[in-house]
Image 1 (cartoon, one colour):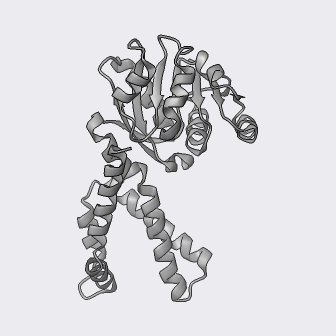
Image 2 (cartoon, rainbow, N blue to C red):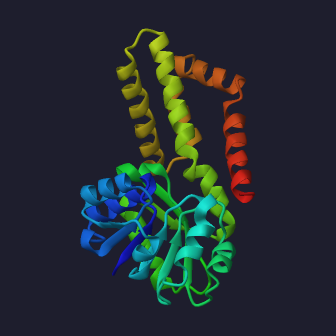
Length: 265
């Protein structure tokens, strides 16, 4: 199975690294393309894949072709490669805000099988979360093939396309919100005298452990929160301040703004 990547940025690099590390794909079976020589050299040396300057070279031989480019240049890239893509090729786009109908119209080739997915940057440490949506013309076995590849670098779930923009808000973009939260907690610790490096480590580990508790215990986040809040204790005072400052509403508004932007891209 030949896998092609159009675009070799951070997300594509994370995906390629996960596939090779988990053994779901071999380096010699992966090709990619990138505009800059520096990117092609760096990714080629790091993973041992063949990297081209010409997108058509990466697309031509692919059995599964990942479109890992920014939404703003997606149509230009599709116009460049659509005539060389094999009819049996499975197209997988990671571009936010670009629907299956958009992709089908841009390719203008009804025989092609097209899938959308929305990964996130924790894929770089094999802890990604990816939403996957496919057109009705894509057989279940092809969807399973793609999901298996995506699970090389984290969790992947099939969802209806109507939820793809929601996936962008709750997982695709949310690492940025979490990084801001970690930074803010560390700043509070620094203000109280803790060295910054240590403050980042404490804050990040607390977030990592808390997330793991949600996933592994299956308990409601509110129940887990209550376990930390002793009567008359320090934690409930901190929670009171967060509630007074509107933390929940601010996060909900941020997710909704992200979803709305994705819908209107």
